[in-house]
Length: 271
Length: 149
Image 1: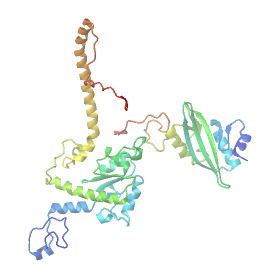
Image 2: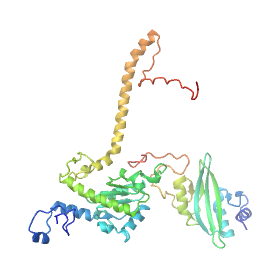
Image 3: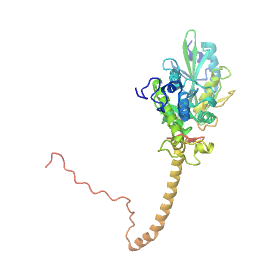
Image 4: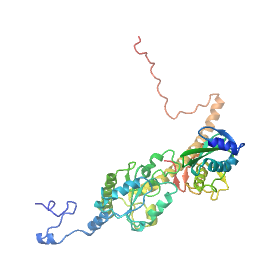
């Protein structure tokens, strides 16, 4: 019997260092960071609030048939200060968005967000003509897990909890420098402004700054286009004068080369 | 006595149009007409108020009354000009009109003169425009959250 298949020792635990068998059976040896990870991911306390019909599925997930307590997430807290994960279950309206933001602000670090349902993922059925719906809760708070569905089945929410547990484990590995692909967050990012010690996940900064970047880009593009237009005017003015003197009309230079002329179509079955 | 007959006999100059489905009365006479419906036709319950936008020049308010025994539904309509849509309130007669009229103001911008609490009910207080109007301009941004994808 190998170490990994020994009964009573789950496969996800780190392989033990070798000790006397009697010692191993009486004392559980592990690393402190592993223990912290394990306790964090096994006791994700959700914030108990629902905004629309997805909340019914969330409640159903908490009840006996689906039993979210199998994953340690059954303690729905009535205050954000005791909660680890915010399950945004339902349609977030523009009227509700500042409240959601405030709840997220009041949660203690480390904290996570599950966007449950089509409305929170991207506006859902109110995508085009819903004047009152925020087109995705990631415009308000950074989202870790996107859970589509209208509404998602309770099994899907359980899957989201399991994915979040993986994420929690990965996060702590990153914080400990175990992940070679991890790069620290930029200074001045959203979370870094609030708490310089708490690093920001890459996806958080991407979500928080996506639209700011888009705005900056459009502004930069406009400035560039204006400068290019001014330069083109300056360059065109003497040239136009010269052409006007010679009598030739000033033709605008095509940006793309003209397409080659199409071959004449032969009627099918002709000839 | 049908609602149309009752209204015609009590308020002969208020009825503009009467069909089997509804009675249309003048806007300034709507309180009296509703009172007649309650006293003569037993319409003791006002269970819905809705508004209709009919561009370019009209807006409508539709009142749905119910008589419980024997069961019947009565419909009262009011047309107002779109440039100045004002209707007298029913909130002092029927408590249920309070929220219904606030909702009609919120979404269509029809004012109800004499309403005890004439504020928006669904949308935020600082929302611009009335969304169910046909010419409503969709917002681009609200409190820092953009409204378009």
